Image (cartoon, rainbow over all chains, first blue to last red; front, side, top):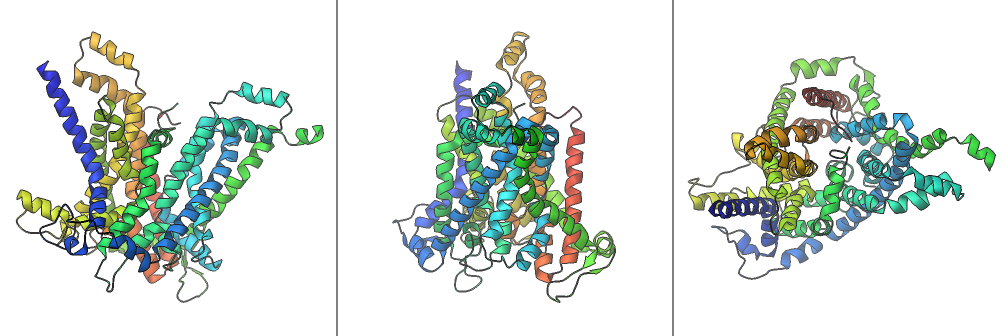
Amino acid sequence: MKSKKFRMVILYSVVGLVVFFSLAPFLWQVVTSFKPSQEIFSRPVKYIPSYLDLSAYVKIFIRHPFGRQIVNSIFIACVSTFICLALASLASYAVARFKIFGGRSFLLFILLLSLFPPVVLIVPLYEMVSTWGLMNNWLALIIPYSALNLPFAIWVMSSFFRQIPQALEDAAKVDGLSRLGILVRIILPLSAPALATTAILVFIFCWNEFLLALTFMTRDTSRTVPVGIAMLSGASQYEIPWDQISAATVLTTLPLVTFVVLFQRRIVEGLTAGAVKG
Amino acid sequence: MRKRVQFLTDQRFGYLLLFPALFLFGVVIFYPVARNVYLSFHEKSITTGMQAYFVGARHYLKIITGDLRFREALGNTIYFTVVSVAIEFLLGLAFALALNLSFRWRNFARASVILPWALPTAVMAMAWRWIYHDIYGVANDILLRLGVIKEAVAWLGKVPLAMHAAIFSDVWKTTSFMALMLLAGLQSIPQELYSAASIDGAGAWTKFRYVTLPLLRPVITMALLFRSLQAFAVFDLIWVLTQGGPGGTTETLSVYLYNYTFRYLNLGYGSALSVTIFGLSLIIILIILLFQKEEVELG
C-alpha cells in the first residue's frame, strides 16, 4: 500500500518535471512579452510583472512590418499545403493501388529523399531563383515547400490509402465511376481524417521553415514570420528588442499551440505513421 | 469510351497520377542534386559574373587536404549529433515510459510534450538566446540564486559552453519527437506479453529488458535514423543562437556551407561542400541501417 503511494508520488513528480521542461521556455516568452520594459532589463530577474504591459504587442506592428510578415506566412503555408496535398493524393493513390515502381520500394526511395539535409539544395536553388528573378517572390518558397514536404505527405497518405478495402472501389467501378472519379468521390472523402492529419503537419512544417525563407526573402516586407523574428533588431545592431521578440513569438506560436491542443492525437498519429504501423 | 479505357491501362494511369509529383521532385530535388555535382567540378562565382569553367577535382582536394574550417565544422557536427541524439534518446525513452502509464492529466502532459516539436526552431532559438542572455538571462538568475555559479556566465560567448548550450536547446526542442515515436512503439506492444512475463515471474527490469526493448527495436532504429540525420543537418538553431561562434566552435557543416557560399558567393566550392555533406549523410544512413542487423520493419 505504502509503496503504491510512493510510486504515484514519483510518477507525478517525473511527469511534472517533464511538463515543466517542455513548457518553460515558451512560458518565459509569454511572461516577458507582458512585462513593462524596465522590468525586462532588471537584475535580479523579475518573475511576475508588476502590471500587464501590452506595448510590445503594439510596437511590433508599428515599428516592424510584422503584420505583413504574418500575411506572407499564412499565404505561403496555406498554398504550399494545398499543392502538396493535391499532388500527394494523386501520387499516393498511384503507389497504393497501382504499385507504380514496385510500390513499396518507391516509397522507401521517397522516404530516403526526405532524410537528406535541405541545405545541400541551397546552392542550385539559389542559382535558379536568382536567374528566374524570383527573389522575394512567394513562388520561391511555395514551389520548394510543396516539393520538400511531398515525401512525408505521400508516405503518410499511402499508408492510409492501403487500408481502404479494394471491394469498395470495385463496387464503384460497377456503378460506372471512372478511376479518377473513384479517387475523388470515394477514396478522398473516406480518407478525410488522413488528409486533415497530413495537412496539419505540412502546414506546421511550412510555417516553421527557416533556411529557404532566410535565403530567398531579402526584403523585410517579403519575409516570413520566423525569419522576421530572427532578424528583428533595434536602433543599433547590438540592441535587440527582446520585448518585441517575445510578443512576436507569442503571436507566431499561437496558431501552433492551438493546433497542438486541438489536434494532439492526429499530430501524433501522423508523425508516427509508417514508423510503427506495418 | 471503351477504347480510351483500354488505352489508359491501370499502369499508365498510375504513372499519369505520379507525374506531377515527380515533376516537382525533378525541379526541386533531382535537378539541384545533379547541378551540384556539375558545379562542384567548376569554378563559378556570382560576383564576377564569369562563365563557369572546369577545374576538375580541385574543390574536393581542397576539402580533403586544405580546408581546416571544414575539418573543424565536421568535428563540431559529429560532436553535436552524437551528444544530442544520445541524450535525447535516453530522455525520450524516459518520457515515453512515463507517458505510457495511466494517470490524471495525461492528455495535457502529452500535449505539453508535443509543443516544443511544433514550435518554429528559429523562433525558439531566439527564446533560448534570451534565456542564455549574459546580463538579464533567466538561466544565470536561477543558477545564481541556487548558488551553482558565483557570477553571471556568458553562455553563448565562451568556448566550451556555447556548444553545450546549443545542445541543451536542441535536446529541449527534439526530445519530444523521440518520445512520441517511442511512445507509439510502446503502445503497439501487445499487453498479453507483459501478462505472460509476469506469470513467469519476471520483474519490471526483466520485462523492460526482454519484452519492451527487443520489440521496440525497429522503432528505435527509425527514430535514431531520423534524429541523427536532422541533428547532422542542424542549421536554424545554430544560425540564430551563435551564427557559428565563438571562434567557429559551434559552426556545423550546414552553417559553414551557408556562411561560405553567401559570404564569398563562390558557387563551385559551395557545391563541392554540398556534395560532400550529401555523401556523409548517406554514410550515416548506411551505418544505422547496418547496425540494425534484422530486417528493418519500415512502413
